[in-house]
Image (cartoon, rainbow, N blue to C red; front, side, top):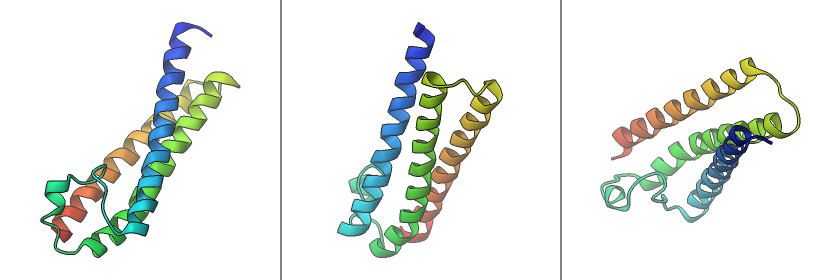
Length: 116
């Protein structure tokens, strides 16, 4: 394994852990009916007019983004360690991850506008 592959593997592991963390945080949010500071700062949550509504809005979107992040990280780890699927697959996966990140950020902003 060369240095570049090692660095990419670290990045892939971090993205996978982030995906798991987002999914676990979303499930915990739904169960405990409190929004973690991962999604919205504590000070900002004090201004939320409808916490249950915001949680219902945010939960499926957080699960979707966390799932994409986890999928991206695992796929890229496999690509680095097991088989090289090629540069085109890497570019498609990176674009998918970035689009999902932008989409989630826009959805979070939309939820804040609607429930705050």
